[in-house]
Image 1 (cartoon, rainbow, N blue to C red):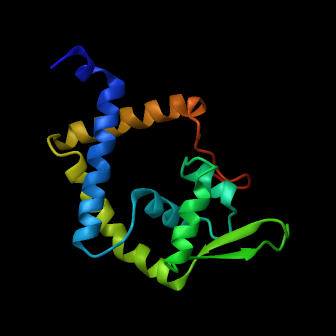
Image 2 (spheres, one colour):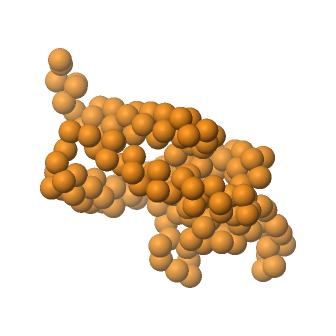
Length: 157
């Protein structure tokens, strides 16, 4: 091992690789075609139906330039619907379709359960400490991100 292997940036990247792998393996085993970002988008739309694309990108801290592809794929899978906003005819409101809402209900407990696999090797107290520290770091560094997390203008998540 080299000093690089103990650097926070490297460890965070490795943890992301592990988290994505665990998520994808579990979804594939259950026959679901869903990525972590798509799941986050479905969850956000379940909590905030009718938001626009920019608001969704802020809620899930995803780059505005590439969120369109995520939305296109979800719409192609018939998991979401787009409609012209009643407030601004240039904007599109995003909502879960019935299929998307049902899928979200089915995968939510699976995603909650796989969190323990992502944090395998930690006891319950360490898991809580890790989550608290990771949350603190994410909040402290939010404005440095190319895709900062933001709440909808009229409500907080």
